Structures are given as C-alpha cells and as structure tokens.
Image 1 (cartoon, helix red, strand yellow):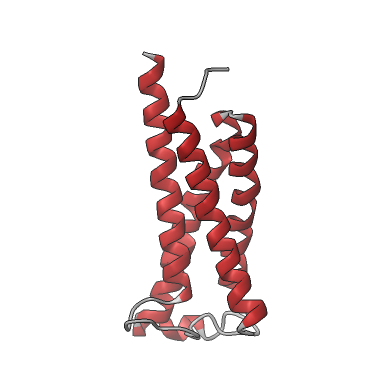
Image 2 (tube, rainbow, N blue to C red):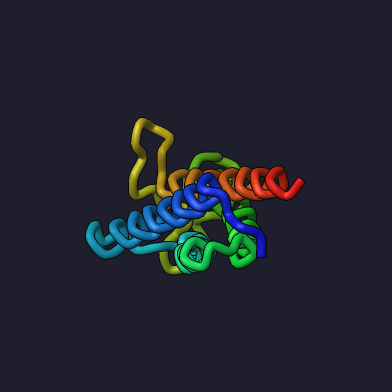
Length: 145
C-alpha cells in the first residue's frame, strides 16, 4: 500500500463530494420536485449512487485501489448520460425516447439556459469524476517513480 499524498487525499474527497452532490441532486428532483425518473435516469442512478460509497471508503481508508470501480462506473455513466441527452435534444432520437417506458426518456423536466437538462447535469458529474480519477491515477503514478 503506497502512502497517499495530501493532493491525492484531497482528490479522493473531491471525487466523493462530486458523487454526493450528484446523488443529492437526483434525490432533490425526484423526492422534492416530484419528477418521476425514466428508465435511463434509473440506469444513471445505478451508476452514480455506488460512487458515493466507493470514493467515501477510498478516502477513509486512504487506498486508491478501492476506488478503481469508480472509474469504470463513471465511464459507463458518461455514455448513458450522453445518449439520454441526445434522446432529449435530437429530433431524430426523440421518437425512440418516447417508447422508453412508463415515463418517456425524451421528457425534459428542466431546461436551464436552453441546454442544461437532468441528463446533462448527470453527464457533467460523470465527466468530472472520470477526469478527476484519471488525474488521481496520474498523480499517484508520478509519486511512485
């Protein structure tokens, strides 16, 4: 087990905080605002919620190897969020999103500034987590040499 630098510890806490904010945001929209999640939203939740536990444990135990599944989950989350956003925004894919399930995946509950939707927010969170994790891995590789 390699000793973590202060920067690595801070990055793990930042990763945990980003995942926690995303989890809180999704619960706010569903539980407080009353927006019913579609199937693609549920998939994004399944990919995001474990990240809070994964990065939390990695930060507490100060062990980066625990966090490796977070890189995989966030990478998949980027793909799902991007597809979901395109279903909402591209007319060619909107028809496919209408048959998503009980709640159509092309429903846009929020549309801040004309482009920021819930899948956009989720995708942004996944990208931030993915990039921060890559920075963490690069930083740790640099300290081993």
